[in-house]
Length: 342
Image (cartoon, rainbow, N blue to C red; front, side, top):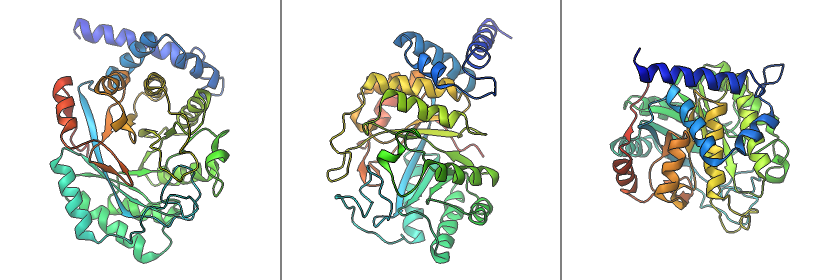
């Protein structure tokens, strides 16, 4: 072991002792909100140093995982999520689009791979997929995208145990099911489901042996305390999510949160750092809203532990990063992209 490895081991032991044996976990082994919020409020550079030390113990600091996402069925959702244009109950209604055909999805996945994505995500609007024809189509998409050498991810709402088993058999790598916000703030955002409903599906997915991708949205009117509570909830799952996407709200006129105060950029970076400290082995993803951040803010996020991004010019119904901008940023930061893990 060289001097650098030795020093990193010392830092890791120090952080583990502080984070997991000295107050971050309560007597029952759960993370505590009080300790997590204390970490969130640390001096900015101290917080970033500690998060970066955790990050380099678990990942290559010069590598990011790139995902691309496609809405394979859009609009007409019966849920009342306050932030979403696809909800039939919101004033802003995304154009309704039926399920895409397999060739269209495969062509989009091929393009994503050419752009450097190692994971391709497929999303459907709606509470769940109860029609066998549509669910079978999703399984076919998973198989086809997997055959391209990409990791696969879907988000299709609530699942049954049987559906989770079939997705696993089709080769699904990740299932996205965000908790959105803190348990205390949840009823302000969604009334057609509970946060416990979300956790139940996460448990079903994990029991089937599929990686979970779960995070939330910030800037919907919640407090920093709510944001920290959301991360503590995720960290306290029996198995924390393998990927934690943190979305900055993209305001859509006509939704119920289109006049909310945006999250401060420094608070967003702090949240990334806290996610890294609370969930060391997880990918921490800067998701929606990245196009509103400067290159410098994105670099701070990556130093603080963000190591996954969405590529592409569109994230479902909202704009993402302009074509070519990521390549320029990665060159400035000496960043390389990750290849599929399987």
